[in-house]
Image (cartoon, rainbow, N blue to C red; front, side):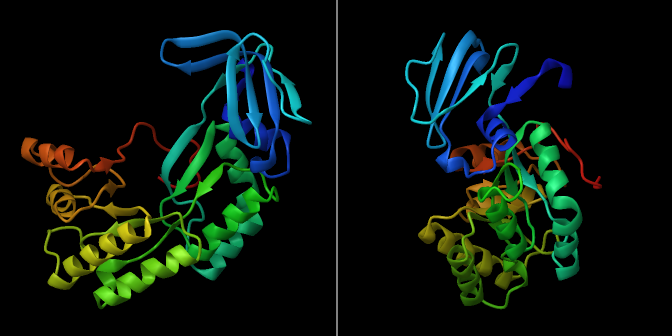
Length: 276
């Protein structure tokens, strides 16, 4: 991989070359091989970034250049989109000790490892709420180099006492700056599938409150019946495929008809930080 000199995506290039915020960057990459998509390859092209947004991809030399743009000669390099890791536990624990250890020992090197693997955006799959928000702040401010972080706050609706408590937790997460609510277990005891009436009421309340506030509410449904039940309740985001029982044709058709998105696995563990 290193011998190929691959330049993986805008965020990777920006994080590798600069300390300042991505949103302020003006950048021109020229003479690069650009893979736009399957079957669409520019052998010698340019990309222009204005204020952190891709403004132009063209064959040959760039047609325009923003003020004070940094020029990168991409000769011999290939420019492709960065990977998105849709579900990763970044901090590795929610205790104050675990969070402090992550920032002291692991944050800087692990965020660089993600960039080196071509991962330019990561959605937290369930971390300490304040910890993941701090990690995002540090990367956004250029204090450490790393991929764009989509923060997800924990709202353990299955363990909460009432719909009101769930709604308050969703509102508090949004007010604190969360980008999504993630890894909401339903039910709390995954198998056998026997959610309590209160668990179901809480989940419906969480889904409704998140929809009102315009924030994704992502369900951790690990069985076929849980998948079908949560989709029937209006869930539109599920964080991975089921791993208890086979999904029937009818259940799959139900998910498809609902328009719900299931983030299944196409690749796993690169890079892997002391996990499975």
